[in-house]
Length: 291
Image 1 (cartoon, rainbow, N blue to C red):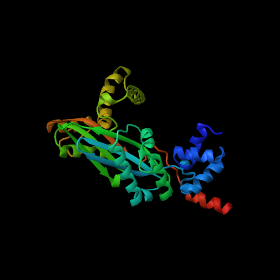
Image 2: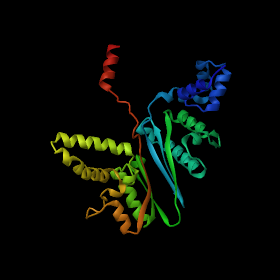
Image 3: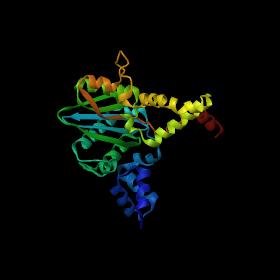
Image 4: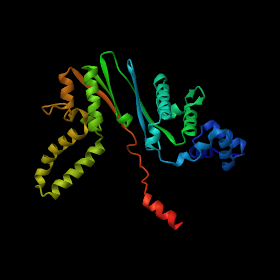
């Protein structure tokens, strides 16, 4: 009567939960339009067709308690909704669900049972209530030992969220590092974390630039060593110059001087990597005039 791909399409078009989509398709004998109507009649009207919209705004959320921590990103379509108390309350509730339970992936999270069904149903209910597409994009859970410290920082009302783990040092030092991560956008913790293909691509660009600058061919590889080290200083946390340092001390050396070592870091910036819709209001007005 209907296939798994029909269920997937209905979920994408309505934002409704999997079981609700199955029920809707069963009730409508596999007719997609009737299934959407069934969902509308059952309180999903505002969620209809939100799935195709771009949700690139939103907030990050962090919860730290004892030796456990979680950081996540939830997206909305507009910054207005991201600042809405109802949306933020929903994100807080979702953060607690992820923090309190043994959940490892977003897919697992969406199917996880909560008071009124599943997390996916909770999201659908929020879409219906708030009136915008809401997307649970990503999360990461970190643990530490008693000898380690969490540092976390939320910037611009959650537009950027960072979480770090230090062996030793102190919570204050860890917080300073988390603030540095927010400001300086390191992509990797150490040079060993830079993927080989990424490094090779950077080297190819550097090599090409040096040749075009007229550097002697026999000198290129030698100059390249210094350029690669500069690249590490730009993208690796431990090699970056610490923003609070007065003597150009690196973050790694600063933490070490304070009896610690950086073990892990997570940095989420809302909407990074999502292609945002570009509004052309002048063109929109002209189209209306022509229409």
